[in-house]
Structure formats: C-alpha cells, structure tokens
Image 1 (cartoon, rainbow, N blue to C red):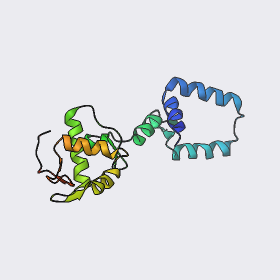
Image 2 (tube, helix red, strand yellow):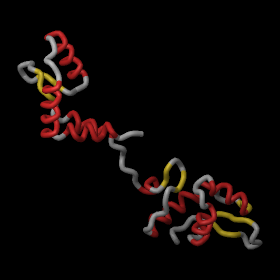
Image 3 (cartoon, one colour):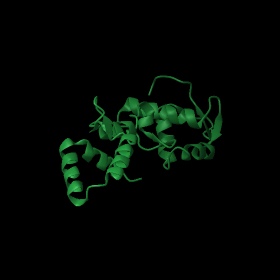
Length: 164
C-alpha cells in the first residue's frame, strides 16, 4: 500500500509549501468561470479544505492536513502486540521480561493447561506462531513454560509462575 497520500498531506500541512503549491497551481491554470468557482468552493468545503469565516467568506482550514494525518495514524502497539503480527511472532524482544511475555503468549496460544503433546504435535502448533518452531520450543523449555515429560516422548505446559 502506497504512503504517497501521507507525503502529500504532510507537505500540504506545511503553510509555506501549501502557499508555493497554490501559487504554482494558480500560475498554471486559467481562472474558472463564476459557476465553476462556486462549484469548486462547495467541493472544497465538503472536503473540509475550506470553511466560512464569521462573515461567510470562505477561508482555508489550516489544520485539515494535520488532522487527516492524525486520524489515519495507527494506534501504538503495546505489550506483546508489539512483537506479534497477524498472530505470529515477528521478532523476539531483547529485554528478558518482554521476551518472557511473548513466550507466555506463545505457550498459552499453542498448548492448553494439562495437555500432553508429542514433539510433532508441539512442533505443528508452534509452527503456526513462527517459522522457526524449534527455537521457540527451546525458548519455552528454557523459560520453564514447557517441559518434556519424564519419558522424554512428549511435552506439557508447566504450572503458571513468574519465574524465568
């Protein structure tokens, strides 16, 4: 998806750039007829680019471009969501506490409490969360969120704790 509209809106949010652009447009075009001017004013007003002042004279709306950019801004992601994209781990956090949050999310997403899974079942579920499921499985075991059963043939979630 192109962000060209953002560059245009940001340029036009700058009063100096907007004035120069208006001068260039005015120099390149002929003045419209009264009917076309009135129609253009209605179009610009509908778009929020101009608004009437106290006397009813059309004036430009100086904040329209900044408002447009602010409205379209994506909300800032917080917590685990900063590292998850489309339900998959996009990256592992460098900070241990944040990494532990992501690992808790992963184990909670992939394995239900009291469930015992074979290694291939664990791999299959973790593969839904990341391409490198073996690394994720190792991280979960190292964080003591997932453990190998004593027989060594399967895995289970550990009891929830704050340890890592």
